[in-house]
Amino acid sequence: MAVIAVTKERRAGETRVAAVPETVKKLIAAGFAVTVEAGAGVAASYPDADYATAGATIATTAKDALAKADIVFKVRAPEADEIKALKAGAIVVGMLNPYNERPALDALAKQGATAFSMEFVPRITRAQVMDVLSSQANLAGYRAVIEAAEAYGRALPMMMTAAGTVAAAKVFVMGVGVAGLQAIATARRLGAVVTATDVRPDTKEQVESLGAKFIAVEDEEFKNAQTEGGYAKQMSPEYQAKQAELVSGHIAKQDIVITTALIPGRPAPRLVSAAQVAAMKPGSVIVDLAVEQGGNVEGAKPGEVAVSTNGVKIMGVANLPGRIAADASNLYARNLFAFVGLFLDKEGQFAPNYDDEILAAALVARGGAVVHPSLKG
Image (cartoon, rainbow, N blue to C red; front, top):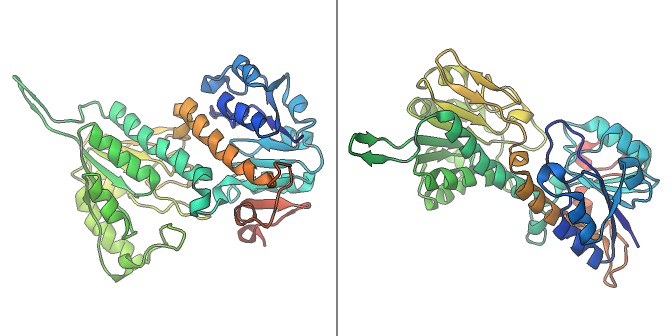
């Protein structure tokens, strides 16, 4: 019987946990044994007693939890002490952030671990239930609007009262992936007037279906600005200049701007310049969801709320899904439960098939080396 260990997240500010009592019960029913480090789920409102009731063994320390673990579930990459505690050949599954946290990946390889990075799960129909980027980005987009609304200090919907009318807030979403679409939907539900932009042509219809207005320079480059995997391509300097000119005039009229643009393996593209921030009204709010990858907004700082000289709040809120830890953990745990099902053969025995297209795409370290093609060299 393969043993799955779930340890407490040790990264500062990380409140999520990689398994919840619901998925522990399912994992045990699938034939796994589960060990959970004491306190692993407390920050996400999942006490040890609930894991025990679901059938998990509660380990006093991470070292105890990892001692016999064949598989380790993590939200973030394991810390050095956890890596050293892994037994030979252990499989680690998590959001390893391989482009930005290469030392952890190298340490896993050196330890002889097999590592899967959930960010590399391919965007194919069979893998949708394992798509951690979508499950977590969806919550990030929602939470970004909530954070912005709190910081804005005014009402979002139009309100008509005997004392006069309160105008609806204007919200501009830059980057219409999963997070951006949820931000649009949430801002619309709260009564804001919403506009959005993205370099991918397919997003125009999605934006309009949510009742928002699409803003973009729709030239030939725009029509071919999407990869086969559904990601945005890096746009030419010429296109960026044209788009910036269009967007600059629009940003100046907005009350809230939410930026969500990310390109895998590269720093986040710069979408909002200091000059554009300076053109906004005092009291306006910008939420930069890409701040942990360099940021879309000039002046954004991870974990801080910067205030520009003209009184615009630039919110570099890190780990927005962690601010909804219970739901974020629940969805992420379901992603991992679906993924680990690929480790079982048709008879339900633990026998990972590394030729499976999903496992092959997500595999980043095996046999003492980093093996993912995009990470070599």
